[in-house]
Image (cartoon, rainbow, N blue to C red; front, side, top):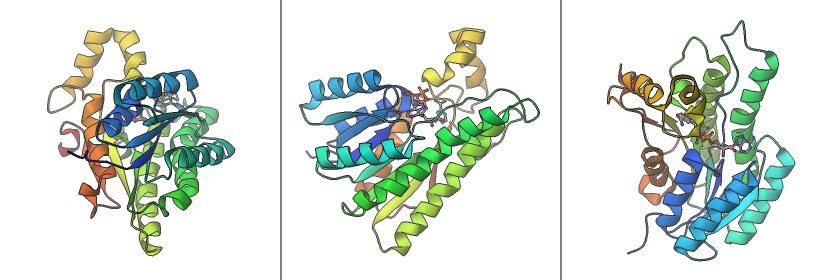
Length: 259
Ligand SMILES: NC(=O)c1ccc[n+]([C@@H]2O[C@H](COP(=O)([O-])OP(=O)(O)OC[C@H]3O[C@@H](n4cnc5c(N)ncnc54)[C@H](O)[C@@H]3O)[C@@H](O)[C@H]2O)c1
């Protein structure tokens, strides 16, 4: 039986661990070829090797990419398009929580760093991938925002602002592509707390059990999510099952935003 994304060729950023690695694995399992990119090259090479061992050589490719660097984006996309024989999907996933304190405490340098990794990345990725994606229609862009892009808190100004920017930028890209007459869709995913290394600072502070229980208590379903919960949404948005879905947002939040 063909997989849900059989024949798709998808570029995933931040794929050395966490959500990026889980999305790349789900895509490979469902028949896609995947380009895994990360600033952590040994990590992304290891993930690609594991996927090739599981699914056969030529399924996964690894690229070193700092998503804030325009020249690196141009080189990695060109290499991935040529290695995979096209590009029909882009997942802008790489992101950082970073930046300490409320708005009075946070330094401008910290604010700019978070905005650069979380927002410049989506701008640069879409800007330079569209020439390839528009040659491989139907194509799909998935941007990983956060529930923190829709709901603010008192002490994460850079993260809130950056993820809200990703939300609207995703809609802008969707409308740009439609206006061009391209069947290239663009959507955002908004997870709440998911079990990845991004939660490690809190785990170090409170201990693993207490940290996860504390976060879980804020979620109506009573627990934090798993990377596979987000990967399933990405799989849908990258497949043709979602062919009429663009400019939309998918919340993977255990009910937090319903409150
Ligand atoms: N895990 C959560 O609770 C959660 C919730 C909502 C949104 N998100 C978002 O999901 C995305 C992935 O998060 P995660 O939980 O897997 O985090 P993670 O820290 O486990 O993984 C992030 C990956 O991005 C890479 N990365 C960081 N900066 C980079 C750069 N400049 N260039 C290229 N790669 C870079 C890291 O090396 C790492 O492999 C992020 O955008 C994050 O904001 C995560």
